[in-house]
Image (cartoon, helix red, strand yellow):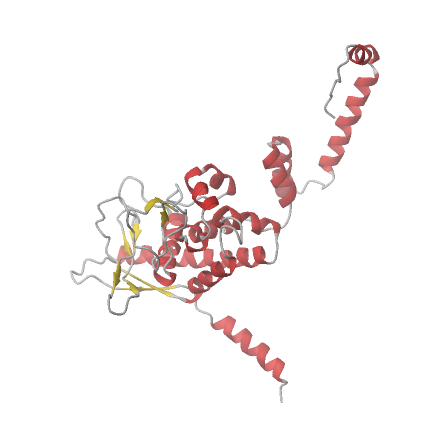
Length: 318
């Protein structure tokens, strides 16, 4: 007979093994306008979205555990946990993405205002709750138009729209309090003047790109419910899916070099990650520069004396 705790462990492992990623179900148009090419494109986008959702889960779990690098990625997309977002509610939405089913129309929808995709909502006044219809995708999503999406943009769109449909996330921002307006919140009326969208249809891939997106960061830093912003999930998934981004190595010196604008240190870190330079390389280089500066200072006592005589403090780097 197996002890109960062993049975519990086995069941937990079975549950993980049988967990099903985000699925997509198609609601074909009555006109039969759906095409195989569109379906194949949606299937491929959902497959990539699922791989990004896996990375997003890793990033979220690391952020909740206090990992410094994951925290940087989280705050770039959701703002500070507790102030701008509820990290536990983010967790709930990610869980919905990990196991839910998104319904979609295969045929491209003829949007009139440049939309890439949208979820239609209806409300039964007798029962009150809003009900989501199948996601509609534009020609731009399917590769037509002036600025067609790339693979990363399509995966991000799948994640964005899935959070709308599965968890009622929103896009619009309240005019006065700066909050994201979820589907279950206020009607989309004159209160909504801004959106929680980023400026990149194909999704930002680095924190540096996010920092330059002033419209998004302005909304992020004012809102207190970024966990209800659909775009944040697509953005977080994109950031967490870049090669090596969640590795612990060099997070502190890399961030410091970015803040200080130290191009030499940034170049060194990049070379060290790719070429395996010795970890004490930069320290030795700094010590050599300091010794050289001290050597030059020792050779010019007259200049130093003249500086003191004039009542000035001469600062030298090194």
